[in-house]
Length: 426
Image (cartoon, rainbow, N blue to C red):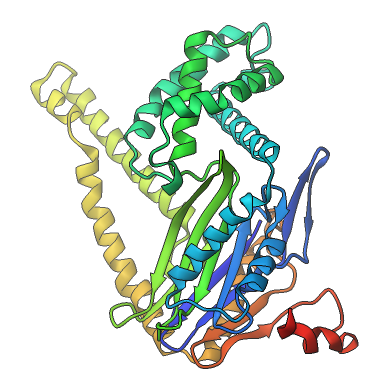
């Protein structure tokens, strides 16, 4: 896993990333602490890119792709950071996504497998007795029914979502079926599910996979690319995050997940990614999981209180029926609004006001500290130490460009002077 952050004000943008990477294999997981997650996007202009989640795209490491793009860009530049992002996406298409036709089919196969496994796990979450051997001969009918009911519950929400991946806006279901049904059928056979699924369930599941291919989601594997810096015509920094997962039939599956632009209305911002719980706690004044627990428990208290009133009155009492129909959300909403106002007044706005005034050195120190605190939280608790290793830190400013504050090397720079002397020649 990963923790990365960008802190922006009118002076510059500071970026920082840990070095931990989690490798999952047939015998479990292992964490390595020397992964590179920050790269210059240009050797000549103030733009960079950070990455989190998957370290490769269609089997090719992102480090190679980014450095090939940098070589192609040479000393070229664009007027805005968004133009750099668009050109990078064009580069992926020009290079055929660094994958053969067979590679694209394999990526789709793996995507469908992930979706099916997630859906089966979610549908059986309240039936732990079935989770050990789902769809065995004894459990086949019950598991199929639970999965079918689960899909019926969630598919309307997916049907109504308007958040399409750009390349799949016009990708019809009939085209998807023609392109991928054979792979889907082969996958069900490989997972020993073809005999367990009736035709109706196969069709519903395939429809849901189509919707998840076309629309934005973060349940399956993806890489977050966070572009940072300045275009030639921009005087303040900006940040654009893109989630990219795979290519299907020469369509790139991606969407823009976050954009932060510093201007006269937005003078400072802290933007964490991946394992952001500690950073969100510092920013908002309360841990995200604690806030969720408070909200859920308050709702349970209100429901329990209403139920006590109903029991006292008797279920047939007219007032009891009115109480049963009370919209709990209308009661909770004002509380949450007041809570959020208090967060903004007492925590978020004062912190962002301070960020607005920070020097470049202070921005770098703050970015590094946020990553270190995330590591420290993992280190001193029983959580998996999935954030760790050296912290890389850089500052990007309009005048000075991309400046490394801290950077690990897999070699000793003093023994490899040719690296520095030849850097701008490649």
